[in-house]
Amino acid sequence: MLNRTLLFFGTSLLFLFPAHAFDFDFQKAINIAKKAQQATKTIDEPEEIEIGHGIAANLLGASPLLPDDKVQQYVNEVGRWLSLQTERPDLPWQFGVLASTDINAFATPGGTIFITSGLLQKLNNESELAGVLAHEMVHVLRKHHLAALQKGARMDIASELAGEALKDKANPAVLDKAIKAGTEVYARGLDKNDEFEADRMGIVIATRAGYDPYGLPAVLQMLEASNPQDSSLALMFKTHPAPHDRLSLLDKEMGDSFDGYPAPTQADKRFDSEIAQQK
Amino acid sequence: MKYLYALILYAPLAAPVCAGQAAYTVRSTEIKQQPFSDAATVATLGEKAGVDILSRRGGWVKISSGQGNGWVRMLSLRSDSTAKKPGDSGLQSLLNVGRSGSSGITVATGVRGLSEEDLKNAHPNPSEFKKLQNYAATKTKAEKFARDARLKTRQLDYLPDGNP
Image: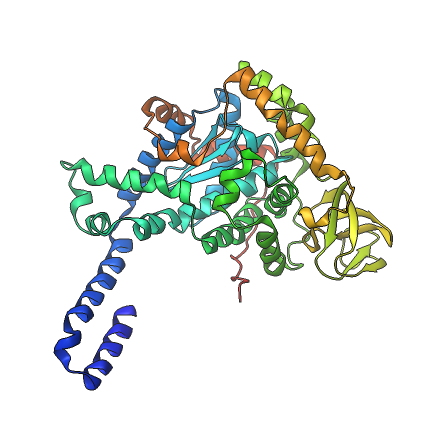
């Protein structure tokens, strides 16, 4: 579509100006557009998973896992159950609680999701946990980080990602570059529309799984009421749209069609015994 | 084990965050006697009316206000700093006190924050990654987990983008 628009625009110009003056830039523009188009297409699923695992290992370098098997297994069960309600149930989904006082959650390509113990401790029930995990899972489903990586990467890396170099196992340098560039995305954040999309789709995934749709909005309200100067929220607030705006959009999108989807009390009781008792 | 103590130290924060929280309406909204849209209307709040949130049930929150008490739609309320009346100590400052305690946690356990710099300078930790992989749950395990809590799947399409 972009190509066609450029072509049309370029062809119209040819009638107005001497052709040779525009030939070079015009051709270059088409090549860049083509390359960008190829890039999102040519990272296949095994590569997506490999890049994601590399980024996950880096995030674990920044913060280790909470050394609590019971909590880790519990979060994996909630997350894996949610994944079965998505269009990519067969990805190697894995979930980790990071031992960090920061309040945040992360997703890496291919199905790795992290939540910090700081955020986990602020949650009140399994539906809120499901809401947070489902939001992150949408970033994986919609490949938001891969898009951000390619958009933010230097041209040489972007074209390597678009080509065959990534498939060359004898040349791990390209993969390493992708992982390094990919990790930097977490300090920069995603496009705000990707975050809105993750909210909008996340509440549906949580509802499909049997949870209270208002788990995620409740977490957003908790964040909204928090002190924006709090250092444990600095990275999360820097990399996400304001909770106020996220709630306003969800208000519009959810309307009154999400009444009558309560979560079973067993799920909340289970959260209390798995998480809250340890608080 | 020491992390368990860290979690115990966090206990005061376990209480529902919204209890007694000051909020304001972002649109005109009806106070209902029960948390249902067809319940009797107690009063109608205008835009920017101040309320106190007492508890939540699904998409409804129980509130008290000058115009009456009852249930209003959760998403008709916001609780950012503009909700704070002058001199109102409110829950926000209460939370701040709780949060400043995080430095105590850091000392006790070595658990710390996760900053932009930490992410930029991160090096891979393969042994933690292996642990992560070992925690992954199978589909069968996840399905049993859902059955145990009577979680039932619902058919629901994704929502259209609400951004104009």
